[in-house]
Image 1 (spheres, helix red, strand yellow):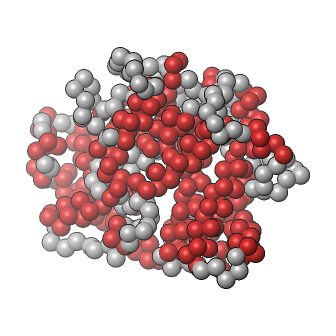
Image 2 (cartoon, one colour):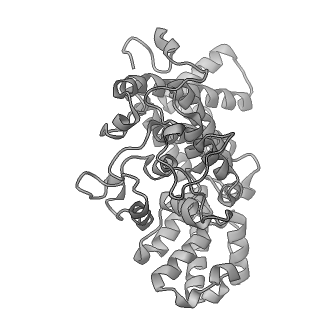
Image 3 (cartoon, helix red, strand yellow):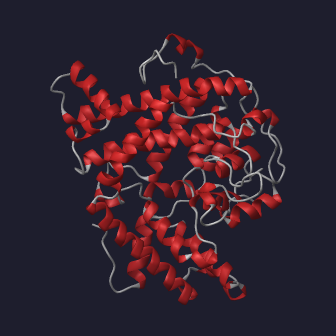
Amino acid sequence: MPANREFGQQGDDFDRFRYDRRRAAYACDPHSTRGRLLPEPVSATRSDFQRDRDRIIHSTAFRRLKHKSQVFVYHEGDHFRTRLTHTIEVAQIARSLARAFGLDEDLAEALALAHDLGHTPFGHAGEDALHVAMQQFGGFDHNAQALRIVTQLERRYAGFDGLNLTWETLEGLVKHNGPVIDATHQPTMRYRKNGVPRAFLEFDRQFSLELQDHASAEAQVAALADDIAYNAHDIDDGLRAGLFTIPDLAEVPLLNECLFEINSLWPNLEAQRVIHELGRRLITRLIEDVLHSSIGGLEACGSVDNIRQAGRSLVHFSEAGTLADTGIKGFLYPRMYRHKDVMRVRGQAEDVVRDLFACYINEPSELPDEWGEGIDTLSDQQLARRIADYIAGMTDRFALLEHRRLFDVSPDLR
């Protein structure tokens, strides 16, 4: 970001970004895709990336996001984000960034729409509990689960399991947060503790995703869009829930600047409008920061292959943007994610997931018929993974109903 421009302000160079359609040299081209695991005829009306996006939207896993928690469980209020509304917001931001950079919008949108498909019920609480339950069987990772969903678990098409997505979409789904292994084939920092998920390695043997390289700029855009979206909407949800107040946000420099601007333009504005104005300004400033801090590196690379070989993510915040992002997360972590009321419900949710896993492991006959098919032939590892697949696919509501069916006492998560 140029030193003579304040954080979040548009400079004279802003005309470098265009919001009409164009394709940059470093954009993924759907006409040059590396294809699908199972070849299919070309569509007469849609690009391959458009077809990927549409298959994701029409999947069962995508619909289930409507009833999966973001931070607050479904019955705590109709206006709090769910995994689905979060996903839609991420997709909107990803499309905006992709268009400004001249990237393929459909690929960026597909990756944004798919990025949370593998989440369990009850958000990260459910994921953590399922990971502990699966520890001796390879653990649980929501990104690896998303790959399992789109390559195996969705069973809708006559010719294949999964969605048979393009290589570029699968690559972005697995590596949007960076490479999975390093040049020596050791797990990168993200996977150093628990190892690379088995789902990644098994699929890579069928259809190599080049796990040691970075993903496309479209995937990197989707990852940053996720950060921007949840920074803004978690502040919104936290204020609505009464976990903190608007004056409390004065601790965070960028938020303080946005609030000062709002108050200067509209003194005594009602709180609901202040909250919305704060969110839209925050999103705008972070998007513009990413655009200005990233365009030079993308243009210098000049091609998709060079972006993958760059050795670092090229779509990123500036130094000032990183500090702002860190400050927001530093505020939200104790005030929201670790708030005593949120932690109480989180603990109850973890109990639900642990109980369900233990019940199905001990009494596999409790699984529904379609999930219990051929169960006598499964190894302990295969049975545990099937149970994890079943639980991960549950919505919050279904998990609670199933717990009440199987146990005499169930929490109400309040």
